[in-house]
Amino acid sequence: MEEIIVRVGGAAGDGVQSAGQILEKTFSRSGLYVSTYNYYQSLIRGGESWYQLRASDEKVKNQGSGLDVLVALNADSLERHTDRNINEGGASPLNGIAIYDPGTIKNFKKYEGIKYCPVPLRDIAMKFDANPLLKNTVALGAVVASLGLDFNVFSGVIEKVFNKKGKLVDSNINAAKEGYNYYLQNYGLYKKLKTFDRKLYTIGGGDAAALGAINAGMQMYFAYPMTPASSFLQFIATHGKKYHVFLKLTEDEISAINAAIGASYAGVRAATGSSGGGFALMTEGVGLAAMTEVPLVIYEAQRPGPSTGLPTKTEQGDLNQILGAGQGDMPRIVLAPGTVQEAFELTKEAFNLAEKYQLPVFVLTDLYLAEHDETVDFDLSYNIDRGLIAKDNEANYKRYEFTETGISKRAFPGQPGLMHNEDSDEHNEYGAVVSDAITDPGQRKLSMEKRMKKLDEYMKEMPSTPAYKMNDAEYAVIQWGSTRGAVEETIDCMRKEGVKIGAIEVTHIFPMNHDIGKMLVNKKKVIVVENNFSGQLNGLIRKEFLINTEFIGKYDGEAFFPANLKTQLEETIFGKKLKVEE
Image (tube, rainbow, N blue to C red):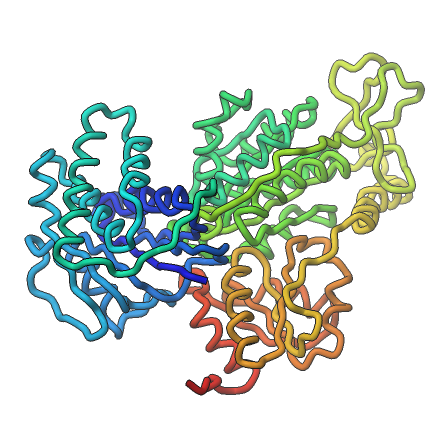
């Protein structure tokens, strides 16, 4: 596999993300697979931010641990990403070339193993436009030159990005070309990337989930904006009208979930979404959907808590919150995509499950997955399953009829001859409240069992739990959500060193598939890897399968990087880091 890792660093307001995304499109149009990492703060301007891209001739699973090319847009970025003593959540310092502007970055410490390539970014940019952000395009031109990429592909991306901004197209292409030529004339080729004539597409996890919802026939989305669920919301705001999706920004999350429940009750495929703090306000609505057996899809994108926590960082700390949301026992399904591809696929699955089993279904992701891009290959084919729906004028219609599966026929407002009650209080088969004058214990028991039966039925059709290199594994890693890429790459590295290790990838968290227990039999050690402090899935695994496990957690606001995770796994299994002979 041939790959390159590029990082664009600067301050908020410097155009770091935009520059990174232009380079991302260039890699993709060059037939390369891409995975990105977006590191930013809450400030609108200032602070530290960077955007990392990993491009390869083969599919890549995460952002990577190394760094080959650095574009430093300010002095702090150059120092921070070259200093061997700084490790930002596992991101490696540079071991390659550094492109920077000597007119603005003058006095700094130089490190061995780095080729410093000053390019007069601002001076070149000023030849074509006074816009200070034009220097970023000059820097990207230098990157393209250093990697031997086709400038025409790069200029085509620029034209696409700026096509609605008139003269900016020409000024950006001309500035990029001069940066490209300056680099080649002064430094030559750093590494020639092999390119391919193939169409590849990249998309972010939140966008992919939103596209999956549209593909599944979602007609209404209700939300109050909250990072990192906002990428889903933004995609619907941008593209929803084209696909006939109604978007409502509600005054708060309580309104959002109740509006989604109302729309679903009326027969519309609807969803809501938020992050942990906003979802806290939705808790009572989850219980309402479960009690009234109204289908509901909830997109929950996690960030560090408690309270407001770290708004622009990642964590997997909301699993217990999702599992415990709503008072009392109630059925729910929790799905956790591990890749951008799965964010699309599991969101589609969520809508069918919600309507078939008439309960809340969660799509649980996190900031890293929601806001990083990957190369994808979507299958847009989809069969909508609306579950059991009563026919007009059905005799003796019972909305909550006791059935073998626990699933009863739904009816929509206005259907002839199907008048019935739907109440948040406990009710009988007709929906009539059973506790106004006197509580009927037997009725309560039957109604509770009816609702919970649906999970037993669902478990009969659950897909098998994905596994990675588990056939001969002596050690098993259990992961969920966005840790997948780092875990799989770490396992690949350890396998090359002779360690028989594999991974169980839990995408359907609740209810939990019993095939997981079978895969854990006779393993020397079971290690659960999570982006949280307390090991929330770890606790669920230990409770469900009554086994001893080890736990590796990360809770600094950043995702796992493979190199660091490898060290942690080696120390957990062997008590020390393995030494590999050269």
